[in-house]
Image (cartoon, helix red, strand yellow):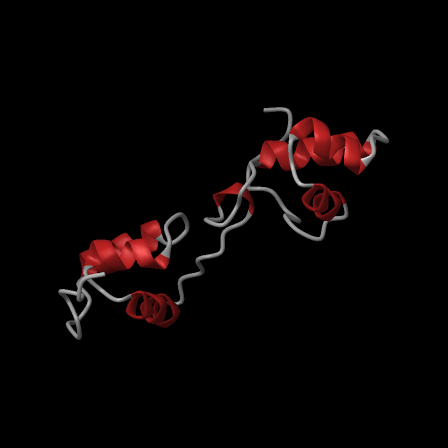
Length: 117
Protein backbone atom coordinates (compact mmCIF):
# COMPACT_ATOMS: atom_id res chain seq x y z
CA UNK A 1 0.00 0.00 0.00
CA UNK A 2 1.32 3.43 -0.87
CA UNK A 3 1.39 6.37 1.49
CA UNK A 4 -1.79 8.47 1.55
CA UNK A 5 -1.57 11.63 -0.55
CA UNK A 6 -3.99 13.70 1.56
CA UNK A 7 -2.47 12.91 4.96
CA UNK A 8 -3.49 15.50 7.60
CA UNK A 9 -5.29 17.72 5.09
CA UNK A 10 -8.84 18.95 5.72
CA UNK A 11 -11.68 17.02 4.13
CA UNK A 12 -13.25 18.71 1.12
CA UNK A 13 -17.04 18.81 0.68
CA UNK A 14 -16.66 16.53 -2.38
CA UNK A 15 -14.78 13.95 -0.30
CA UNK A 16 -17.43 14.00 2.41
CA UNK A 17 -20.18 13.66 -0.22
CA UNK A 18 -18.41 10.66 -1.78
CA UNK A 19 -17.92 9.16 1.69
CA UNK A 20 -21.64 9.47 2.47
CA UNK A 21 -22.56 7.85 -0.85
CA UNK A 22 -20.02 5.01 -0.82
CA UNK A 23 -20.00 4.02 2.84
CA UNK A 24 -22.96 1.63 2.61
CA UNK A 25 -21.51 -0.46 -0.22
CA UNK A 26 -17.73 -0.01 -0.12
CA UNK A 27 -15.06 -1.11 2.34
CA UNK A 28 -13.14 1.52 4.32
CA UNK A 29 -9.92 0.36 2.64
CA UNK A 30 -11.32 0.96 -0.86
CA UNK A 31 -12.73 4.37 0.06
CA UNK A 32 -9.39 5.30 1.63
CA UNK A 33 -7.48 4.28 -1.51
CA UNK A 34 -9.78 6.32 -3.75
CA UNK A 35 -9.57 9.41 -1.54
CA UNK A 36 -5.86 9.13 -0.76
CA UNK A 37 -6.56 8.72 2.97
CA UNK A 38 -5.86 6.00 5.51
CA UNK A 39 -8.62 3.53 6.43
CA UNK A 40 -8.40 4.83 10.02
CA UNK A 41 -8.98 8.41 8.80
CA UNK A 42 -12.05 7.26 6.85
CA UNK A 43 -13.38 5.39 9.88
CA UNK A 44 -12.87 8.41 12.13
CA UNK A 45 -14.54 10.77 9.63
CA UNK A 46 -17.54 8.44 9.39
CA UNK A 47 -17.84 8.49 13.17
CA UNK A 48 -17.35 12.28 13.37
CA UNK A 49 -19.96 12.95 10.65
CA UNK A 50 -22.46 10.59 12.32
CA UNK A 51 -22.84 8.45 9.20
CA UNK A 52 -24.26 4.97 9.85
CA UNK A 53 -22.48 2.51 7.54
CA UNK A 54 -24.56 -0.52 8.46
CA UNK A 55 -27.55 -0.69 6.21
CA UNK A 56 -30.28 -3.25 6.45
CA UNK A 57 -30.61 -6.35 4.28
CA UNK A 58 -28.71 -7.00 1.08
CA UNK A 59 -27.57 -3.39 0.85
CA UNK A 60 -25.22 -4.04 3.75
CA UNK A 61 -21.71 -4.26 2.37
CA UNK A 62 -21.09 -7.51 4.30
CA UNK A 63 -24.22 -9.31 3.07
CA UNK A 64 -23.38 -12.52 1.24
CA UNK A 65 -26.87 -13.51 0.11
CA UNK A 66 -29.76 -11.58 -1.41
CA UNK A 67 -32.97 -10.66 0.37
CA UNK A 68 -34.75 -13.01 -2.02
CA UNK A 69 -32.67 -15.99 -0.84
CA UNK A 70 -33.23 -15.08 2.81
CA UNK A 71 -36.99 -14.66 2.41
CA UNK A 72 -37.22 -17.86 0.36
CA UNK A 73 -35.46 -19.77 3.16
CA UNK A 74 -37.95 -18.39 5.66
CA UNK A 75 -40.96 -19.14 3.45
CA UNK A 76 -39.82 -22.73 2.91
CA UNK A 77 -39.19 -23.15 6.63
CA UNK A 78 -42.68 -21.81 7.40
CA UNK A 79 -44.07 -24.41 4.96
CA UNK A 80 -42.43 -27.13 7.05
CA UNK A 81 -39.29 -27.82 5.00
CA UNK A 82 -36.32 -28.81 7.18
CA UNK A 83 -33.34 -26.40 7.28
CA UNK A 84 -30.94 -29.14 6.12
CA UNK A 85 -33.02 -29.72 2.99
CA UNK A 86 -33.27 -25.96 2.35
CA UNK A 87 -29.51 -25.67 2.76
CA UNK A 88 -28.87 -28.50 0.32
CA UNK A 89 -31.24 -27.23 -2.38
CA UNK A 90 -30.24 -23.56 -2.15
CA UNK A 91 -26.55 -24.35 -1.77
CA UNK A 92 -26.25 -22.32 1.43
CA UNK A 93 -24.41 -23.33 4.61
CA UNK A 94 -26.77 -25.15 6.96
CA UNK A 95 -25.67 -22.96 9.88
CA UNK A 96 -26.66 -19.86 7.87
CA UNK A 97 -30.11 -21.32 7.10
CA UNK A 98 -30.65 -22.07 10.80
CA UNK A 99 -29.67 -18.52 11.75
CA UNK A 100 -31.92 -16.98 9.08
CA UNK A 101 -34.96 -19.12 9.89
CA UNK A 102 -34.62 -18.37 13.61
CA UNK A 103 -34.22 -14.61 12.87
CA UNK A 104 -30.81 -14.48 14.54
CA UNK A 105 -29.40 -12.65 11.51
CA UNK A 106 -30.95 -10.57 8.72
CA UNK A 107 -33.93 -9.71 10.90
CA UNK A 108 -35.31 -7.15 8.49
CA UNK A 109 -34.98 -6.97 4.70
CA UNK A 110 -33.99 -4.00 2.61
CA UNK A 111 -36.69 -1.31 2.99
CA UNK A 112 -39.29 -1.64 0.25
CA UNK A 113 -38.41 -5.29 -0.52
CA UNK A 114 -41.02 -8.04 -0.63
CA UNK A 115 -40.83 -11.66 -1.80
CA UNK A 116 -43.66 -11.11 -4.31
CA UNK A 117 -41.57 -8.73 -6.46
